[in-house]
Length: 402
Ligand SMILES: Nc1nc2c(ncn2[C@@H]2O[C@H](COP(=O)(O)OP(=O)(O)OP(=O)(O)O)[C@@H](O)[C@H]2O)c(=O)[nH]1
Ligand SMILES: [Mg+2]
Image (cartoon, rainbow, N blue to C red; front, side):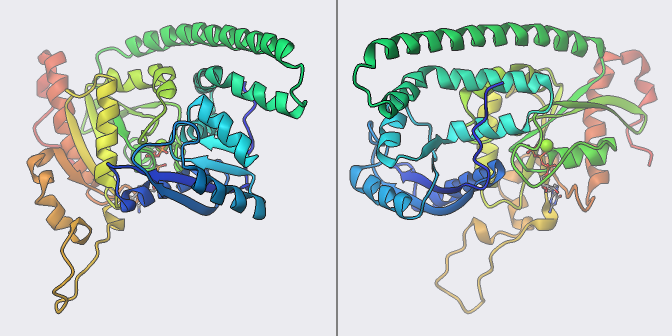
C-alpha cells in the first residue's frame, strides 16, 4: 500500500483560477467544495487565493505576481500545504514546489488521498493503490529533482537518472501486478453478480454526500455507513429488498464528484460495473445544495463515460427537509428573482416537471414521502420483473398493499 501523505490538521491554503468559462461566483462554489474535500482529508483552510486568467500558466499554473503573494503568505503563516483546484502537470508541480517550498497537492491527489484514507476492503484498497501509482508514474521525475536539490544536486545527474529509471520500473511492475490482481477480483465479482440470477437490479447513484447510503438504510433496513463527509462509501453494498412481495437487489455505491480523476473511474471499474449492469438507476440529488443542478450534470457526464445514459432512471430529490430559498421583500423592486429564490413548488414547475412521475421528492432522514418512493420503485421494478418472469406476473398486483 502506498504510504498516504498525512495532511491531518495541517494548515492549508487553496488556489483556484477564474477562466473565461467561469465567473467569480462559480469559482467560490468550486473552492467551497475543495474546502469540504480538504476538511474530509483532515486539513484546515486558512486562506484562498484566486486569480483571473484566460488560461492557466503552463509553468506555474498561476501568474508569477500572484505566486509571489502566495509565497510570502505561506512563509509568514507557516503553511505546510498548498492545494490547487485543478490537476497540475508534473512540470507545474515541480516548479511550484520549488518556489513555495511547501507540500503541493492538486485536486486529483486530494481525492486520491481521501479514497486511500477511506478504503476499507482489500478490493477498494487495491483499486485506490492502482490509481495512486498511475498518478505517481509521470511525476517521479519531480520527486527525484526534489531529492537532488536536497543533496545539492552537483554530480547527482548520473546516478539520479538511473534511480529514476529504477523507480519507474518498480512502479510499472507494481501497476501491472495490481492490474492483474484487480482482473482476478473483477472475474470473481462478475461471477458473484451472475449468481444473483434474474432478480431486478436497482442501483443508487449520485453526487457524493447526497444521502444514498441513508436512503439505502431506510429502504433496505441495513446499516451502511453514512456521514456528513465526502466519499463515505467506497465499496458497493448490495441488499435484497422486498417491496410489496416483490424482491429485487438494491446497491449503494461510491458517490461521484466533478472532475473525478480518470484514474479512479478506470480503477473503480468493477465497482461501477454494479451501476453498468443495473436495470434501473435511482439518481439521488441533494436538492438542498445550492449547486444541485451542476451536480446532476457531473453525474450524468460520468454515467455517459461508463455508457449508462439510456437506462431507466428515476430522479430522487432528497433532503427536502433542508431545502431553503432566498426571499425578496414585497417592497423590494430591485432584486431580481433567481433560482435561489425558487420555492420547492416553483422548482417542480421547471424542467423537473418534464421528468413527470420519474421525479420524486423525499427526505431520507425525516422519512418524508418514503411511501411514494416505495410505490414508484415497486411499479418500475415490477415492469422489469414481469418481462423476466412473465408466468408469475399475477403475483404482483398493480397497487402496493401496505
Ligand atoms: N437534512 C437531511 N440530511 C440528510 C438526508 N439524507 C441524508 N442526509 C445527510 O447527508 C449526509 C450524507 O449522507 P450519506 O447517506 O452518507 O450520503 P452518500 O450519498 O451515501 O455519500 P457518499 O457515500 O459520500 O457518496 C449525512 O450527514 C446524512 O445524515 C435528508 O433527507 N435530509
Ligand atoms: Mg454513501
